[in-house]
Length: 188
Image (cartoon, rainbow, N blue to C red; front, side):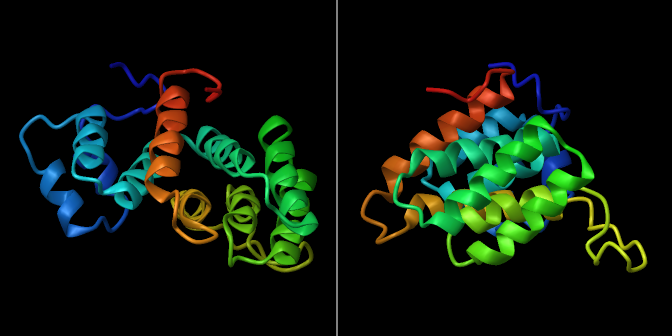
């Protein structure tokens, strides 16, 4: 399967940019392991959280944040501040400017980072610009910080509120991510 949105041909190129779990690294260490191979093997071994983190780092930031939004919208039990955080992240995807990014910052803070919703907005905020206040010196976020927030959103959205549907949610969410990686809109 061709993952046209992932700009890497080898899975190790992705794991080189973040600290992957040892079990997942053993998959990637196989000769000629492509990103698609790593995702499939991760699914087969039920390394769902690791597979999500890997895919989040493999996708370009806008596609990764869209993936977080799609997964978060899969759930319907969000509070009003959490829903506003998801909406702000979605707005940033469609209009990735500084005002949308700063709105994502505010809604992430209001929603909190205890659930996936706040992490979706945090990912949009960490997509670029400065991590400090508007009038403070510019301190850009580390280049892969948005991917960690995307993974946080998707992993928490898969297991909350009680973990009962975690495996099913993970399989659905990774399918959404694969569709985006193939150039689709992530809709099932």
